[in-house]
Image 1 (cartoon, rainbow, N blue to C red):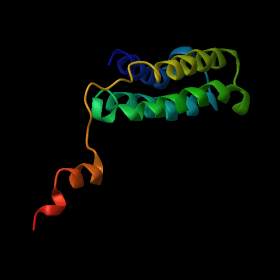
Image 2 (image 1 turned 90 degrees about the horizontal axis):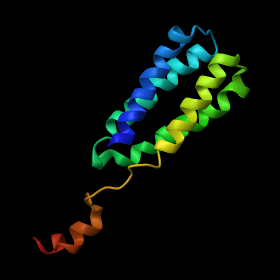
Image 3 (image 1 turned 90 degrees about the vertical axis):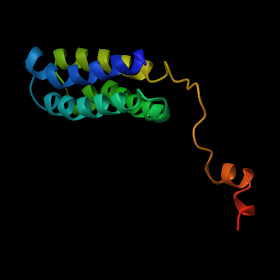
Image 4 (image 1 turned 30 degrees about the vertical axis):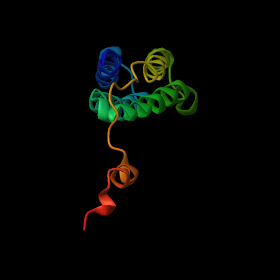
Amino acid sequence: MWARSVSFVLGIWLMAAPAVLGYADPARTNDRVVGPIAAGFAFVAIWQLMRPLRRVELVAGVWLLAAPWILGYEVAPTINSLVVGLLLAVLAFLGAKTGKQFGGGWASLLASGFHDHR
């Protein structure tokens, strides 16, 4: 849960970073799009059932690592993007265990004798 919480805070930081660090487009727009995505998916992935959604944090992190060169950032947003991107990518792999098994799909219904009830 702590990794998702840190990822959530990083997403919030991305939304605030353009104003705090004073940088403009295209980094500003990118951070204001990726920030809510990272924060939202990190928040939802706090719950064990939704933990697989942490993979979106990995995608966001990889994008943030590549964005400075693809979009042509200046120095401050480049450093911010690289640090936050690396942290999101690493955090996506941490705290991924779930203590319970959820669901099971059709196989669990069939195994429980669902097909015998008429």
